[in-house]
Image (cartoon, rainbow, N blue to C red):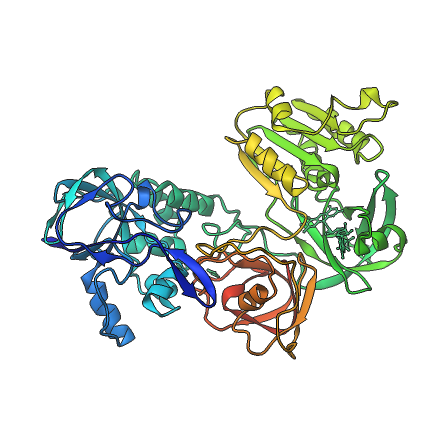
Length: 571
Ligand SMILES: Cc1cc2nc3c(=O)[nH]c(=O)nc-3n(C[C@H](O)[C@H](O)[C@H](O)COP(=O)(O)OP(=O)(O)OC[C@H]3O[C@@H](n4cnc5c(N)ncnc54)[C@H](O)[C@@H]3O)c2cc1C
Ligand code: FES
């Protein structure tokens, strides 16, 4: 009979970690006497970061004494105390390779159901004073698991743990954890996991993404959005075959293979990264028909913008421009449901490529082209979009001019900014996929207004960071790291427009990015979660710790990689 050996609770507190303040609830202390298990928490317990922890599906975290003994031996330690792994229930029995997802247990007066394995993050490394822990827990098949509280009631140390129902499909916690994080990812087993109703919606979403992943993709689609490997490595020269105006501020450049061969097809919505003679590296969404022999990018001349000024005035047909292969996961996904293509200004570029793709497929999907521009003079692609929409049987168009000119009354449907109210008034379909591109505030407003659909967004700059549990600090624009400049290879962060020499003392590309205030995303910092997966546009890296499951081809897990020579990152 399994036994509850210790009930541990703790409220979040601030902990100093590497000069930063982390708000975390991972410190738990044993409680004498009864504790009420409620739908969201044990009484007296709390989580610091509700994005990654807590909630109904992760109400009570369970860890086994057998794993305590295992880690004491493996790590050569004898200093563990109850709650050492951040768990609420320290239990005797209930091994990760025996407990099935969906099993139900009665403990004291409460009823629990197993919903998912633990999702490891760097905080367990802080708690254990060993940064390898998030990876070790997965690699050694001892993650621990979460209970959902099916029926609230009191529990106390010493209670028997009585199994009252077996989880369907007979998949253990250790097996489900390995299916997501470790190489292999058997489709059959994933389908089996998806048949367990108790599996938390988050894990179900990850497994569905793995099943939907196109066969050509590499990497772990359960952890990050997948796309096919880049068509070539590094930069290669492309010939400019035409420079054409699209509006008063936007010009298109057509690019071809210098030897006349058709360029590899990009997916509708992907972007191209170009390196100019000056050394500036910039990305531009492909705006032309995907699958054509050439690529087309459309560049807005920004006031005082260096690359855009050069691309508008310094480039002629016949010139060569270095380009990295098309990339990006903001792509039109196949399906039958409605498609909303919503853009502002030059943000029309990737969604125009999607409109091309839909027209070329003679799609019967309901398609909405919603475009915001200042006025007709600054609106790009008006005639092209009209012609494409005319080829679609189920298309709708809605154009907003924020500052219409008197001579263009018939060219727009609405005078003013595209707002939540104007979108609601359109009676857009309530489901389907929305693809949104434009300035940051536009993305935020439109995403909120389109809640209920699958909203995909593209940002023409650095993506927002993800630093779970770290106290927010005012951010500075990216800058070289403090101290003596490094003497190693050049590391370029393209979206942040920063190139710095690698300081030999930097532990990882993530550490360097943080020292430069380049926005980054991470969670485990040791090659498990893939949150830090970033595009490696050119160059090579070596791993200080091998990733638990490799990133997609052409990508890098920056938390555990260092440059081998000059590198260019899509960060
Ligand atoms: C995935 C992706 C897709 C993109 N797609 C497109 C696209 O399809 N079309 C497109 O036009 N762009 C696109 N961009 C943006 C593009 O990469 C460039 O950022 C853009 O062209 C501006 O580059 P620039 O060198 O001309 O401007 P920069 O010289 O980098 O300047 C950027 C802006 O900052 C201002 N600025 C510069 N220095 C200062 C300073 N010291 N103080 C105050 N302000 C300053 C400039 O006035 C300018 O407005 C995309 C970006 C990404 C990441
Ligand atoms: S931060 Fe988790 S893999 Fe890099």
